[in-house]
Image (cartoon, rainbow, N blue to C red; front, side, top):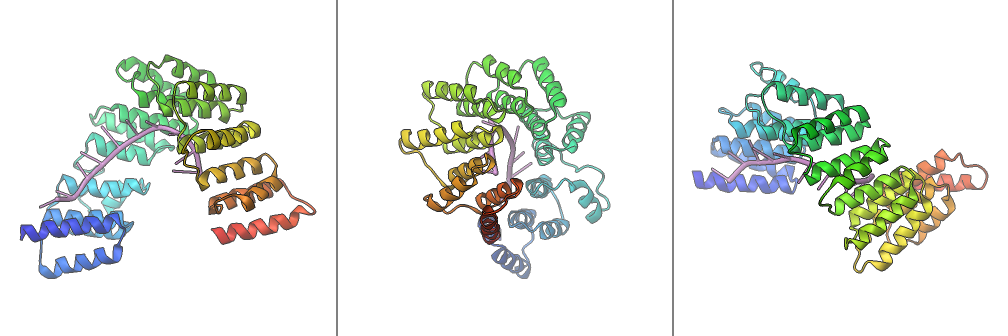
Length: 345
DNA sequence: CTAGGGTTAG
C-alpha cells in the first residue's frame, strides 16, 4: 500500500497548508479505518495537526506513533516552536514518562528553532547555554537569533557580549544578516553610534541594511540624519520596498518625527514608480498623526484614505485618543473611535 | 511520500 500511503501523505500536507482541520480529521479516520500504519503517515498526521493549529491533537497523534524517528520529534518540536510554546520538554514529560529532560534527537536546526521561539526572553539564553554544554556549536543563524533576542529585550549588555564573541570568532562579522541584526539591536537599545559603527564597517550593504539604519535614526528621534541616510539609500540605487516604508514610518512614530514621516510617505508613493501602497502604510500614517497629537487630521485621513483602516489602525487611533485625555468636543470623537475599534476588532 | 534555522514592520 505504499502508493496509497504516499498519496495520503500529500493530501495531509494539503490540509495543513490550507489549515483544513475538518478534512484532515476526516483523512485521519479514513487512515484508521483502512488500517494503514507507517511512521511516515503517522508523522504526516502530526504535521497536519500542527499546521492546523491543533497542538493537542498533534501531541496525541505523536504519542500514538509506534516507532518514532527523527522526523517525528522535529515535526512536533516545530509545531511547538512555531506557536511560541516554550514548554515542549514539560509537555513531553507529561505524555511520555520515559522522556528525559531533552529530546533524543537534537541538531542545530531544532536548537535554533527553540531559541527562536524563546527570543526576547531569558529562556533564550538558557537554551543558548545548554545547547553549547551539550556539544552543539552555534552557527551564524544562532547568533543572529540571539542578537534579535537581545534587541527585543533591549538588553544592551548581553547583546554587546554576543557581539564581542562574534568578533572573537572572526568568521561571523562579515555576514550580512549578522551585521543587519546588530544594527537593529544597537538602534533599539538607543546606541545609535554603535549601530553606525557596524554600518560603516560593512563592505556590502543591502536594502535591509539601509532600511534598518534609516529606521534606527528615526526610532531615536534623529530625523535629520535619518532623512540624509534615506537620500543616500536612493543614491545607491536602492528603491524602498513596501516593508521599508512600514518600517521607517513606524520608527517615525516612535521617534516623534511627524514631518519627516509625512514627507517620506508623499515622496515614496509619488516618486517611486509602481510602489505598492497598501492599507498598512495608511495605518502607519494614522498612527504617526495620532501619536503626534494630530487627532483630527488622523480622523480626516481615516475617512478619506483609499483603504479601509485595519482593526490595528483603528485600535492605534483609539489608543492615541485615550492617551491624550480628550476633553470637550473631542469626547464624541473618542466615543466614535472606540466604537470603531470594537467593531473592527 | 513525513522537518527544519536567519536580518528591516505589524
